[in-house]
Image 1 (cartoon, one colour):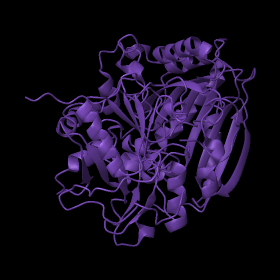
Image 2 (image 1 turned 60 degrees about the vertical axis):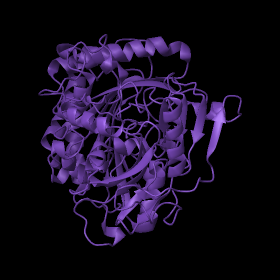
Image 3 (image 1 turned 180 degrees about the vertical axis):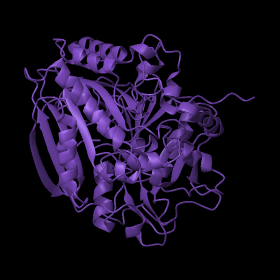
Image 4 (image 1 turned 45 degrees about the vertical axis):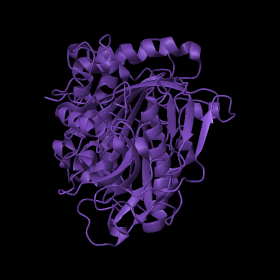
Length: 551
């Protein structure tokens, strides 16, 4: 999950304030391990010496508590040890030890998972990949090598300063590449350049396909690669399912030659951000509210086809609860997009049409790297506690009238929950130029993503906040068993915004399994990959792919 809206905007406590801080969403070249020998012809990568920074941290160690939690303080595991890995070989050793001891292992790169995948009580060995953060160019593969512990901010800086290129990933700079890439990855440039995985050339993965030891496998998108299925599973199958990714290689599929500056999309020189703000006051009636939301969806229905001149616009509509802030639309784009000001003015006018409420509009132009690595784009909450619950869905079109009315009701219900609301995130464009089966990212005709969220800081407020967001979500999908079953309006959900409730019959009464909501028709193929590369189910979590039983 799932990708901040812009280079500026209000910075209040809460995800809505940063309009998607967790949605998603470095050094220059020449870093150790970033290039060079990436694997033998048979697909197995050579071993590496243990790296500096590798460590084994157990209870009682003063470092243990600081490394225990990820970004969401709702979850904290109790592993026997935290293994900090600095090289691929460190990972191989850790996975081998987990196999031999029968202990469950969970890899973590940035720690921004929305659920307890790495903090489940069953995890006995937490594998911290944060030291593996090199980013560089690999001339042998004519692709950019990115280690899983590299944050998106580091990736952007390295690609920009070294070669003036980028990837259409999320806009929260602290998110780790490890999980973000494997789940599909999208962000401010995706409507123009597609998902991150549309530029994924290969992966290096430590797998556990034998009972006594782990091994390293390199898999690429090349048609004759015998391990191509493992590459495909990492183009939207989600992290923590098939093994531990220790390196990604990125190169656009239509790129030719060996000039690195032409192998990925060019970085914009400047980013232009716009902000339109509608006040939550007496003028924002139920009619005005539903018209505003409907207009935002309708605009995306009309302007999200591949190649649209409007595909360069990335818009987020941030809808706070009444009393929790205004309704704000953030739009950002490469400042060189032709007729940018005119197109954004048309968008603002279209969204506000018929509401009777005029927005306050502002805009600003900032250097590209400033916008994508600004440290203020981090998580919500405070230094002592940040707790949140997010639920999500893809939209093929705008909400129905009944859903719009439900949204207004829940966002004006007078609940004590103060930092809750909705985010509508622009999608589609070049993302939808790729056939569904070409990658494991199944939703290829959606035009928006929508996120239901609440954030708080006090553990005593857990029950109220969880009840509110769960009730809101269930009410929005009351006609389909409380979840966004693929159909005319909805199209399931995004695995990078995981929601364990979708696997809970108390909240999913649709009869449609959670894996259909995330993977649709791709799930049996993912199961086959799981059965080949992780037959013992060493890598698992609440929403993990299950191996397909042998016939």
